[in-house]
Image 1 (cartoon, rainbow, N blue to C red):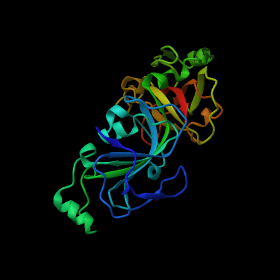
Image 2: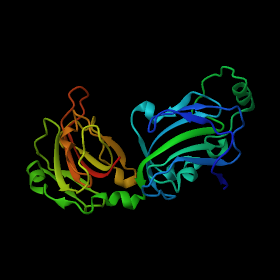
Image 3: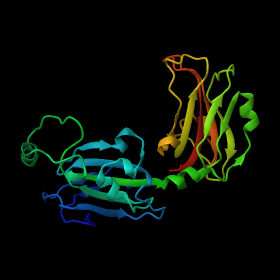
Image 4: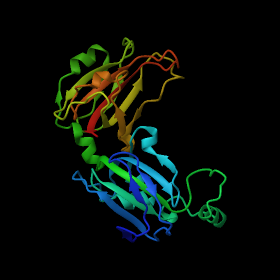
Length: 294
């Protein structure tokens, strides 16, 4: 596959660094090849072909000023494996470094397919179209800020050097965690253990990275389990991001996760979650490895 690094018809961008940009079009045709232009060079780890990335991004159909998707618009970055996205993203982001901002022009065949002839003609003439069902067709443009990432093994190893400290406190609550630091964790709750009545964070193993602050965003591997004896019909089934190599982006909010403030990156923590009376969701416990601060 040919990947170009620039094209004269790419849109120009305006706006502050780290924020969703505005695009301006020159009226030219989309490049035939996948085109990946690095606008800002980062100095962080390089993302491999099977890597996991954390990004902020916005996407446009070619020659449109309206985004069809934007993580900035949703207020949170997205994490994913390059093996699980459209080919244009897989090929376009492989080799990028954390800290990069890239502008990608992706042909339809490397995205969600080509536009029908009528749709393309209407777009070129500026005519109103019936809203599309499903992903956008045709040539697409994305601006992507690479906030974090690495290989699945590198990310999972973020807690391997943490120092255990919270086993006794956790045992008092009837909760235990198995699995080596830096590897998949499994959480067990004893029958009859008293349910939490408020959110509580117990540091099971303390890392040595930068401490989290209110509003911090971080990449985490997570495994959770509902509290035994609750309404299991309402309960979420036990789940683990380690199973699919899909760590999640977590935000330290001041209501539910304020207990994470001051906890250093590289730590393994357990969050005790009280029952949600408004939804009937039973109490639960979650083990969380704080892999990377974004």
